[in-house]
Structure formats: structure tokens, C-alpha cells
Picture 1 (spheres, rainbow over the protein chains, first blue to last red):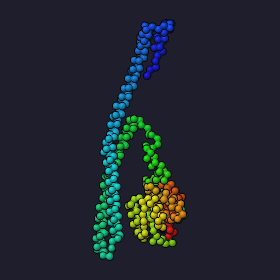
Picture 2: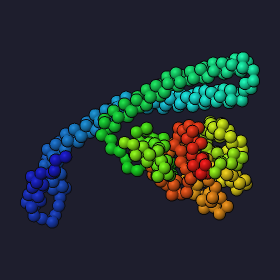
Picture 3: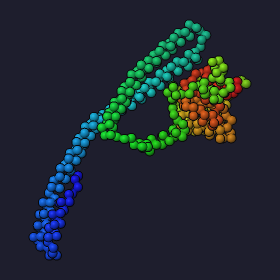
Picture 4: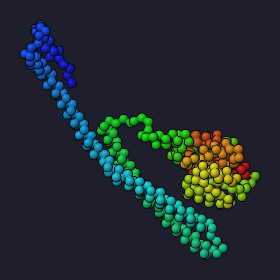
Length: 225
Length: 127
């Protein structure tokens, strides 16, 4: 917004100096009002244009934001994609659990089977082996379900990244909420890291070396380079 | 020294499938007296009711973790000498070091096999 120019004030000051009297008439007030209005007319005109320009920019920004928020398709994510991904994950847990129970049940049954009659024992083992093969088909289904979940995650990542770029978002420091903070603090305090990627996970042989440094396989292997 | 196959063993894991796997592996190794608990606090209750020859515990459980259970066991005069093996997916070096400092007798990284479990039990009992 432009600052007021001194010349706008000079005409008012000059008029007041020329009227070197303590008696102020209505004519004086009207004349002063006219001079003031004329003097500041240009200032207000330039100010109007600046404000209009700024309001126009704000309006454009809001229009862009509405468009970007629309592109985020938050309602679609919240009501369809995320619940669907959650259901897929639940089904993956259920299917792997069912398959594991079937496989372990077969293994337990085979171990407990009476092997005195070899012919019937073989038939029994064959029957259980078929069940094992069938149970292993879960891997194909869970693989497809995982792909659907990954696709949803990719969609969310793409939309959020686009929105963040559009509004020049900067990451907030700290945690999103109190529950997240508590989870993070518990994990830190109790060293709950979960499974590591294979490249980062400590090997059992390295663990063994920490418990039995002298007699570990690592120590023995070191003797035979 | 031979391992006493009749000793009671407490398996602590919040995942029933893992309890079933360890039970079966222990059964194959000859151990029949196996109890289980779903977290550290449930395990602590069982440990105070019955004298166990060995605790095999997961790390990541709620509300009480295996690491907290280990520290509780080592701080209890009645339980402090109970052999304790950690079987866990926590595979960072700092976890192994912390468990060792807390007094764990051995540490198995998941996934593991029957031979690993047997060798660690043997190592704990000096067999």
C-alpha cells in the first residue's frame, strides 16, 4: 500500500495558516473538508487499486487452494480408499492366520500319527500334504491384497505431496497428537524397533559372539580366513 | 550336564501362533511341561505361582514387554536365578546389549529354527 504523500497535507496546513484566527466558521470547516477531500483523492485512489490488487491475489490463492483441496480427494480417501485398504490388511492377517493354523495342524497331526501300518500312514500323510499345498495358496491371494494396499498408499502419497507443494507446506515439529507422542516415547524407552530390514538386522552368529566370544562360530571362522 | 527335560518352561508371547510353534519345537526336543503367557505381567503372575526352570520370552508385548519382564525377574529375590532366553524380532545391536546387561542368558533372533532353539537351551544349561 502506498504511503501518504506530504503534498496531501501541505494544502491543508497552508489553508489553516492563512486562516490565522481562533474563530472557526462553518464556511471554514466546509472549505477545509473540500481541500482535504481533494488533496487525499489521489491517495485514496492509489490505495484502492493496491487493496483491490491484493484482494484479487487472495481470491486467486483461495481459488487455487479450493482446486488443490479438490484434487486431494480427501473424502474419497477417508470414505473409500483408506477403509478398503484397512479391510484388505485385516483379510491378509486373517488369511495368513488361517493358513498358519492349517499348516501347523497338519504338521501336528502327522507328528502324532501312528506309523505302525505303513500303507495307511502313507495315505494319511499324503492327505495332510494335500492340505498343506492348499493352505499355501494363501500367498497368492495375500500378494494381490498387498498390491492393492500399496496402490492406495501410493495414491495418498502422490496427492498429499502435490497438496504440500501447492501450499508450500513445512513440516510441523514434534508429534501430531498426544497419543503419537506417548507411543514414540514408549518405543524409545523400551527399545521397540520391530523387525529390521535384513541389511540392518543383527545376525544370530553376531548375537552368539556377544554371549560366547571365545567359542562362537565367528571366532572359529576367523581362524580359517 | 544334561538338560532336565521334565522342567517346567514358560513361553511368553502375545502371538498365539508363535506360542504354538515354540510349544511344538519344545515338544520335539522332549519338553512336555510348557505353560504360556501373553505378556510380561501375565508371565510375572505365573512365575510367582509356579517355579519354572526356563523362561522363553518375546520382547515386544503390551502392556509389559519382555525386556521389562526380564528386569523384574532379575530384581526379584525368588526369581533372579531363573534362566531367561529372549526370542524376538528386535534385531538391533542395542537391544542385544541391553538384554545382556539386564541379565538375559541367551538371545535368539526371529525367524529361528529348532536347531537354534536347542543349541541356546543347551548353552544356557551348559549341556
